[in-house]
Length: 63
Image 1 (tube, rainbow, N blue to C red):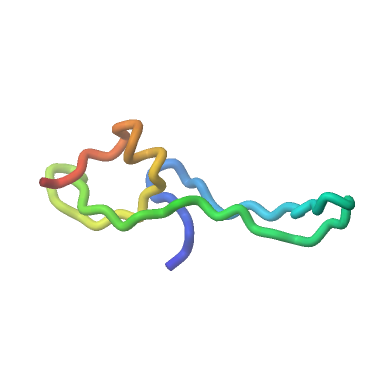
Image 2: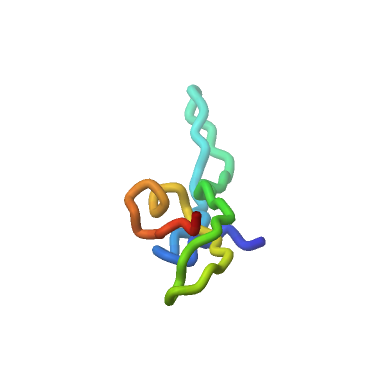
């Protein structure tokens, strides 16, 4: 599963992990993607959505 939000398009971002001494190693910041049963065009569907979209109400969860 790719770590991409189907609502906002949020995806992993590469950067540096910087230690206390200033040494830099590569790291990935990965969004918290959840598989959610949601209502899309009046039908139930599985979506891969980040938790920010779920909390902000951009996704209507199928109950």
